[in-house]
Length: 329
Image (cartoon, rainbow, N blue to C red; front, side, top):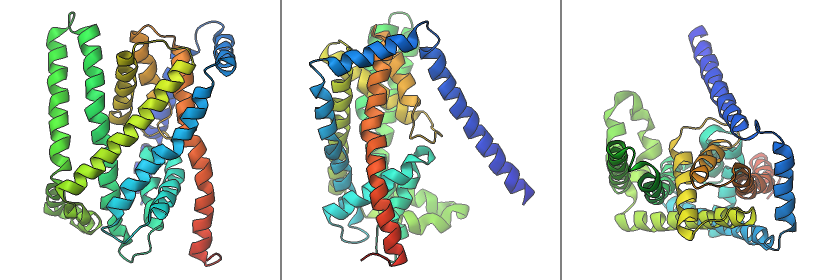
């Protein structure tokens, strides 16, 4: 019992240290310059008074489109467990988003979607949820690799050709690996089944082997659709806050930022807040952009796509709790 408590304590301590380190780096990177808050206030004020402030409205309109792609994905994936309407799928996504908001790596997303199902075998949906998240990761890696390739060739190739070439091969290998895993999900199930301590979890992920190549392709295309909506929102906000680049630089910077945010392990209790901001400031800093302008756009993106929908999702969480207690119909 004491050993388990010690392990839990050390795990929590490790997570706390990583979170503190992330926010310390964020603070050190941005707020150590003199008159930082005055500068930031000026940036926010200029954006609010800018004739381009309609870009915020467009970004906000894209919020339900963003999560609509995710809902459609869940509707397709969840059909292996039970029939799900698009509205039910959307509600499940909102519940999962709210619960995932307060958990590291959005683990609460699993619980939220499972709780929305009625089937007695609903725990088998864990595999379906994992496939959906993995597809989104694949989309991020595919697009993000191209974005990082731009930075490698423009900023590192001449000085570090050997390292740059190694990184390029690593990125290509990663792309091949995730695509092979995506279209051979049954192999992942077989690996889990072959490991005795993990065999008890097979029934929760066995559904992963039920998806055909065509179904996986449809889910991947939906993931790419959602990815590009997210990318468009970020670009619009960057333009609003005065970041001036070519279309290729916008796309490379944003896709590279999403890639780094996705591959860096996160234990933040605020849905990766900090990881994306540091990545964005680093990459756009290479492009000669002001860090505070990039930070403003990144935080606005988080507010629009995570914080606001999570707050709205509380309504669905409360409704779910009432249903479970039999208070509501």
